[in-house]
Length: 619
Image (cartoon, rainbow, N blue to C red):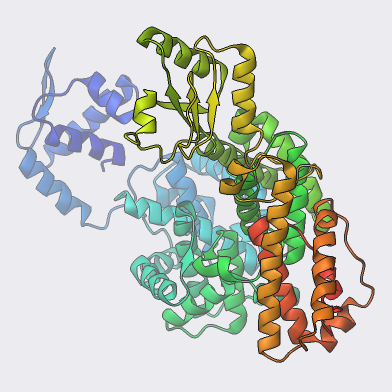
């Protein structure tokens, strides 16, 4: 019989329009030239039975005279019940693993060697390696019993894990057009039941009802897991999870998706098997698309801000950066926290590369994760620090482009002086883009579109252009360069959250026009009072509180005096928080919603207890 490698050689020869040399075949198959020559001898022996032969010509190569006839003969030969062809080490271990995982009784090594078409010594070597892999990966023992054979010693949960990984490999093989050969009846039943299209249809139906997102690399894993659960359930093997898992996981997005998928399969699944599927989908990092609209745990938000303050001791962050990083980390850690509490693995496959490529950022991330661990009494570990590192780097790279300032140069001197001025500015001020060099006439006569320009640098006075202008000497001095740099970057969103003197939440637009910290604080106070005023109008309109000017005046003074206190992280204490919430729940809800809106828009972190302090002015 021909091995799989020998069939590949025949395919190379039949598809080639010319004779192939031995060295070309050996490179194509990644084997030695000696191995190719041995295979060619075996092919010649096989071809004699069907009246064909190889045409070997020295210094020319090897070819086949009648390739079409030979291919037809091979197709006919493949349709016969033949032993398994040549398998490489990876393929043999997959076959052996699936054979043992689906076997009802111990399997003899001689029987497995015969089925795979290899020697008993080779099968024993493979079984030894498989035993090590099973122990290391799944903590499962491959037990050998004298005069009986080999058998897996594992429970239903471990068996499902093994089958899930193996089926994922089978799907990959099928996608590559490689066939898996069934060794025993159990393995044949498993492979025959594998209907990837049915599972994909069920996932598509579920996605239509509960729009979700799943990482590309996890999609095949999810398909394999769904199949394994379905196959085991239909064969009468169910698995009840721990009670704590059932209660916790029903609150996760993965459970909603699991329910829709199991319904779409139109199979009779016990409720606890849906919990099992949800657990597995959570491990695949599945998320609902609309999750950003659901309420976020205030404690997690505060924890993330504490993590960001830790990061700010190492690097400067703009307000836009803080907001972006906060959004990323809350979304990520919300899922990670659920997985940690349910002991769901959260391996970071890029951890080694992250640590070697971004060592400084990784150390910062470890400090941030320590804050998270203390807040929730968990041990997130280095895998989670690796994920946080990726968000830090992503945020930084985004800022490099986002924070670039656009400069327009107006020069009253000659072309040489203009170029010298431009070169000096580019070489001494980083993160800027010199958009153009124009004349003062073009600017003053409105012949040049200055929309999108952050600063105009001119060697002659220019007025009333609607953009900040700094006047410099044609041979710009170091002092003038320093002034430009401060003007561009000192009064921008680069305000440190951990520095109470500079922690002034503002929009980028307003900060560009701010001349000092006091104006920023005044702006923030005004915006907060608008939010409070809107809230009061709603409370009065709905008859929830009585409109009294004294109350309004007291609340106004409270807010104005509270904002500086909030900025430095000093807050009221409220011993009767729960009772106050219960007694005036609707008023409390309205105030809390307004506080959350202020937190989001103006990057304040006003805790829940301040809601009660505001409420006391109204009831």
